[in-house]
Length: 307
Image (tube, rainbow, N blue to C red; front, side, top):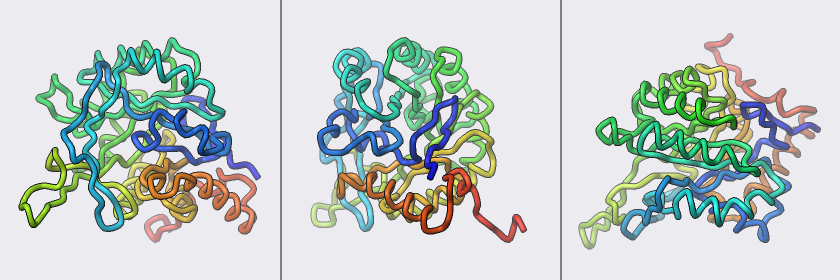
């Protein structure tokens, strides 16, 4: 059967399962653990222009059916990433997508330009859940005009396919999705983590050093499904779904509501082989249901509204 899927900008994956940014290091670290040729692609941990130490610890906390993280985009910066991480990344037998975050349109664009000149990168994912210093520190992804402008700036600077990752912590995510599509995005990925908090009742203090963090894991899957469905219904570019995907059934639900592919994140912390099992489970489902091409399954949700 044909599990290949198109995620925008001419990039085709061998199957619709990718490793999500921030949960898989810079990907090469896992090459001895997983057969990366068996998955569709990997998304690196987000890189910023300059090195970042990240937020104060504790940075993670377990929650019912999920976890909170407040890493703070800790990373070695663009120069060190290019020198140290790109060489092993380009050797991986799967699609390689680099996640970037900047503090301004110009910084995003400059990072994209420099990475576009390097071999071994198949696409860029813009993490717009980062503060725009020229917009009062408001997250790029929280305002449609800011999301549009940063997407347009990166598209102008890079020939690579551009995927824009959206935050769910907004009033109308479909409007933000429409804005980045208008700005030239080749694909859209969602959802990033939900804003959350945990409290140490004995100490009467926040559990996380940064007070709040991002909630991920199975607890957010219903929210993620609904938002992926809304965005897929609004835009014409490919949509990549994520949020609480642990099993093949989870992934298939995202495909049915309109995603062209999925990213697996928090599940990898519990089961490093989760993505491989999901690929096999999708293939088994297609075989059992007489589905010759995964594309025949995408967006096939039947609703009373569409009847």
